Length: 547
Image (cartoon, rainbow, N blue to C red; front, top):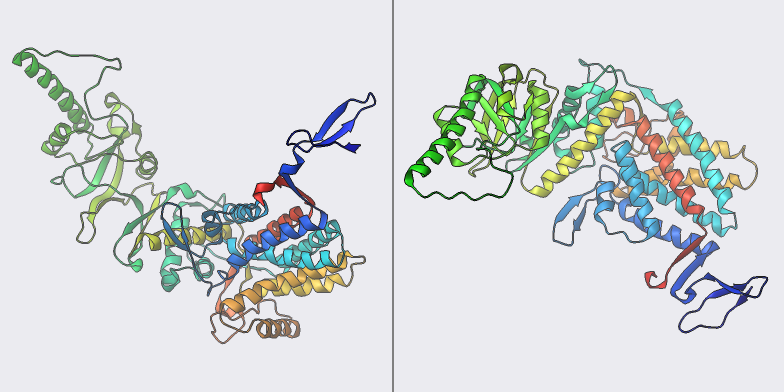
């Protein structure tokens, strides 16, 4: 193989075959930038650690919030790890892997998105130290894998099973409270935890241990106070009655759900209609009126006392509905229609000809609710017979608080779902991480070869979580960690952690700081898999303008 001279403006790697014919191996080398070996590892680890460092200050109950402004001026205030990383414009390829990591944790577990990124950053920091010692990246990755398996098994051995049933929900409330403890709505921790748990249990299939989140609708309305947030046992529509003089409250409502337009049929081809006399106009008007009257009459004959229409209807139809004392709501979205059909037992009707009493849904109460001094109104459908659909109505001083409350409640609901699936818990405040760190350090003594250094590195990385919790709580990180480690070793008690809220005890069991076992295990597994992937990359080829 030989290096060819420059051809024009291009520098190319050329080899010659056995007949002396040249062929190009790598085109336009001068336009490529390449990092190999240790330089590639260092650059990748630096990029990932930079992203993880951003989230470190948001960890725990005293974690700080971030304010993110999009290109078009939308403002988001949050300390949710997945949301922060999604809203940040991360351009580096390895940084994008961390964004995907937090998204995976959010999709699978729903909570712990900040912790998983901080854990990955801590592991990469330890990996960098081991690379500087000359240890091969594959041996480091293998050591981390072994240590992760020990940690996952140990978490299972130190976990507690929390018995709960529909009459005794304390464990669910307390686990949801721990999740909400680091959120902006933590001031109303108990109220929000109760709303989250009650919403999940309303739609949960306890026999199959499954929860369908599509049946939980979360609506936000600016105005009022955060503590005015409520759980509606039914469906809330961000709509109002189509006419201001229609009945605002309907008891024992019979609901017709229409997906057909409340207007005369129109030809589907282009057409032109010439009206030359007043008689022709009156005849056309009478025909149109007949269409409207027939439609309204079919609704009345079916026994409906409320009409929900997916499409709009003009003032003529609206006036006739009012005259016939038939309240109606127009422009109801497809998702809401499906939820109402599930909750009320109604059938969705595509044509007026199909209207029949057996296709109507029922609800104990339908009412229109007004908010404050504005004209904001909502329609609330309550006391549904098949109430498998519920709505959480969030109030707040501004849209940012409502959006953050939605994210926080979603996390709490995910944790409740996880506890319904698997009712084993570990203790928070860094207690589980310290216990795993001690177990792995003990295991490291039995490992021969250079993997021992990687196993010890994993144990040190686990301690970064309690250190970050202590830092964010305004405590001295190293003394806090040292005292908890000493107490865990002496008392052989795995539920001693960092007292972030300064309640005077390190016992997380007494403080009732719970985390789901599957959430914590998933954190360790996902972080270790990502670090292993990054350590296996030893060559980065990119256009030079990207550097």
